[in-house]
Length: 204
Image (tube, rainbow, N blue to C red; front, side, top):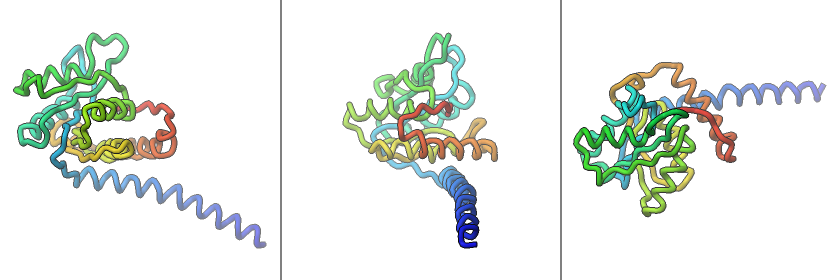
């Protein structure tokens, strides 16, 4: 009888974890999306997204417009663009982003394109490496609202003080439950296996 009670308690505990942990993660992601506050930093980092032969997608365009806005507001003296290219691409997300910023009034001397990264984790590793070489320690990450929490977490895990400036326009500005669910899964994957160096295939 005691064994059966113990088994029931263990099962109840496991079920509780299965429910509570994802709900807690989703709540944290949602709260950060709605309450992110960017702080003055060394670098503004534009997270990569799709580009089409040098033309930023709507998602990337919204991030670039946000980066331009906070740069003009004096939130940081330089912008890093990040993102590699897909097979067959003639350019990279980082290069397309840099070109757009230059064409829209940002001096090229204030922009560094880092043509690496096809997912959030590899992108974070690439720009953090560059920041360390330059002896910078703080970053404002420009990305989609629901992406902020995970992007901040990855930067902080690498010793970088990070805040987020979420996009205010574009397709991801008012994302729904599907994006929240996807980000919850991606965040849980990162905190369980991503920190061990296992490659995670997300794009955001």
